[in-house]
Image (tube, rainbow, N blue to C red; front, side, top):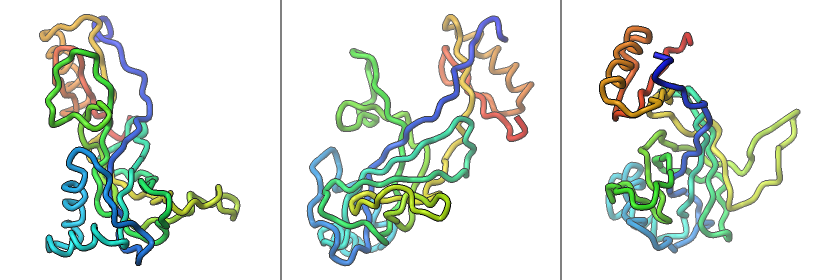
Length: 219
């Protein structure tokens, strides 16, 4: 197998998303950023919390909520169900996120695609980024404290930036990727078969260039 493939160096992946923090008791904003389906997506998140469309709309249009950017780092070999620390940043600075609740937000792996490559428009995000799919979901109470070390708060709290310790759950196992030295569909299928024999049913080939292996925990 090693004659025809090489393994990608495992690295952390930055995950990003857009969400809404609610329950701010007037410390939020009534404005919603312009953008591709921004308002629609924020209402969709709030509907998971309030159920009733008119309530979700009322909250989004009040100063009791604020749209935010959501970030997390997906480490190498993260397994489905693992928890990730989350950072949120309000689009507007004149707000205070302390004690608010982040409605469920999808975190995606965004990449730049080569110029001229055809991409399904449903995966295209603002700024020309392309989504490689949802990797985790974030939700929970927001704190302005990034962490505590030796009994002291790390960093100076900033009202428009918040944190959720273990606030996101990994959707799928982030496995090892084997790349073919030369794209070949037959060799990919052969490599997948050999990997399945070694790692049970945890190897998947989605194209003629790579095999993804979801390594069992004991490895």
